[in-house]
Amino acid sequence: MDGLNKSMYEIGSDSAFAILARSQELEKEGKKVINLGIGQPDFPTPPNVVEAAIKALKDGHHGYTSSNGIRELRCAVADDFFKRNNVKIDPDDVLITPGGKSIIFYTLLMFGQPNTEIITPDPGFIAYKSMIDYTGAKAISLPHRMENDFSFDAEELLSLVNKNTKLIILNSPANPTGGVVPEKELNKLAEGLLKFPNVFVLSDEIYSRIIFDEHKHHTLLKYPEIRDRIIVLDGWSKTYSMTGWRLGFGIFPKSIFNYAEKLAINSHSCVNSASQYAGIEALNGSQINVEKMILKFQARRDFLVSKLNEIENVQCKKPGGAFYVFPRIKKNSLSSSEISKYLLEKKFIATVPGSSFGVNGEGFLRISYASNMKNLEKFTLCLEEFMNE
Ligand SMILES: Cc1ncc(COP(=O)(O)O)c(C=O)c1O
Image 1 (cartoon, rainbow, N blue to C red):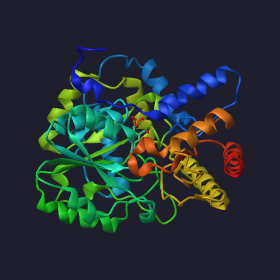
Image 2 (cartoon, helix red, strand yellow):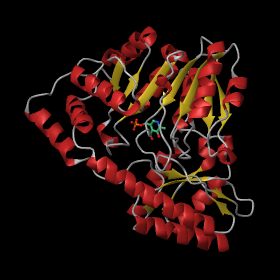
Image 3 (spheres, rainbow, N blue to C red):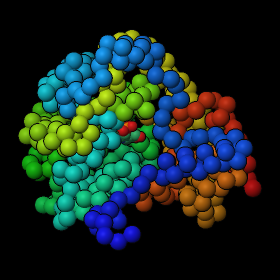
């Protein structure tokens, strides 16, 4: 197709959605597919949250809201952020969006353009690179290596910054690896960034509540010296099993909030109001369902890590957060994409090849453990069978 804006030919897609579509096709053919490909919790939204949305609709909240989100919700976000991070934020800096993904989109529209560079995690969430490519900026890979527990090295990151660098994207706990960046690395980064006063950071903290063992989440907003350049992305999708409600938020520095809001006004106008009322209840109501979900995820992670490491030529780190494991799998000279395809077409198990997340993801598979134990057991047995074939 000719004639489109040439950026359209650069934009990528998300292979997890393509794999979901293929799984659905197989299911239509009567196959029972175990889906470990998609990143959404397998628990329902907590009932008190659903009730709050129903009440909002019955109370007549059917219209547009202010484009940045209803004030009560932005205040609830600020209170919750303080409770979790001990960092005060101004509710006026919060932009409520239809899912966290919009924050990636708006931020990259604000910073990306030809002849600029944006540093992005590799392996990393697919939308970052797709959108960087769309804007014409150059994506610079920041390796997150297995040997480093899938964290980055602050010195290496700072060595990638130059006069063309406009933005750094970070994500902890991370998709696709579950890696958590330790505080000491963030301390080094915050100090090093003082030398580059024009570089902004998009800190994707959407998995900040899903964190295990001794690991602790540290928001980048806790460093006052760089705070005026930090954009935080978070939302309800993962923590409250609300992927389909489309509810997320960004916290923007005052200097650029107005631009983000204009992008919102010109694209989604506002998030549907029932979801916003549900979001207030999610933050202010009981957290018992979230706590139960995290314990379940932790037990599944422990099971998978231990089983996967028993299989020859499979190596799996114990991730500190999110709900993914990212094992290295060596089978002859097969690529991660060939292994993932084989597992889907022959064993009916959907996974995502590591190469979808960047060149440093080759040789790995992303397994989402947002699925029950029975399915995870079946997966480990099938993988073992495949490795022995
Ligand atoms: C790292 C990361 N950021 C952002 C998102 C987007 O979340 P949402 O569904 O709220 O748009 C996801 C979803 O998979 C994610 O994994």
